[in-house]
Amino acid sequence: MIPMKIENLYFSFTNSSLFMLLTLSLVLLLIHFVTKKGGGNLVPNAWQSLVELIYDFVLNLVNEQIGGLSGNVKQKFFPCILVTFTFLLFCNLQGMIPYSFTVTSHFLITLGLSFSIFIGITIVGFQRNGLHFLSFLLPAGVPLPLAPFLVLLELISYCFRALSLGIRLFANMMAGHSLVKILSGFAWTMLCMNDLLYFIGDLGPLFIVLALTGLELGVAILQAYVFTILICIYLNDAINLH
Image 1: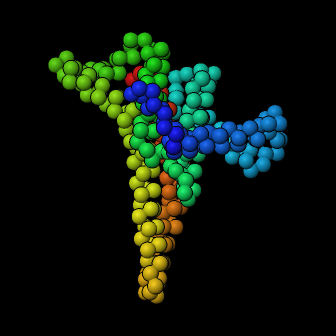
Image 2: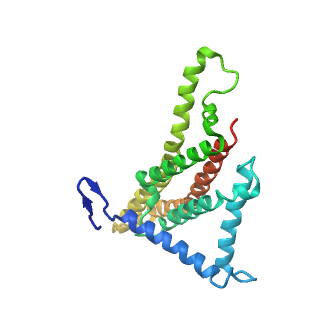
């Protein structure tokens, strides 16, 4: 949309950038209007109830999935996890709006997000455990001849967490949207044909599209939840070595 280049580095403002800014603005406006009176109303309205529901949901998720720490220490990770969940949830949901753009259906976006979080979790692991953090590469009781192979396998498995986290979100969002688009195009083509038989036959694909749209709304919420709970699990593994 706005090409920008410095030598071999590209900083172009794309549709992904635009819709991420729109999503961020929407989230900030929602939180601002809910909390502008110093913390909201005593009797919450629908929007305040939504924000409180998201807040309580993520807070319970952090408390349940991250063990071995006091409540105050867990709260240090809560803002990052809350922002990640809220951002992904709104990105996924706004992608369901016609003529909108689904940011999370682009692999580079989800991969960049997952790798950033993966690096952060690794840094937290070293901060909490020092070099002892590397002990997760070698489970206890492993015979010495098998140690080099298991260290390599555990290292590959650990590094693939970042890749799988981004691929899972990208693949689910891309596959669902592609299926809805294909069936919508098929239904529209049949609807535009000047034939009663085609018009009657169009009802089948049309109902399937409506059902898939409802399913995609569920997937949009579910994928934000899955991404967030996996962050909590990986963070718990980095803090509490097994």
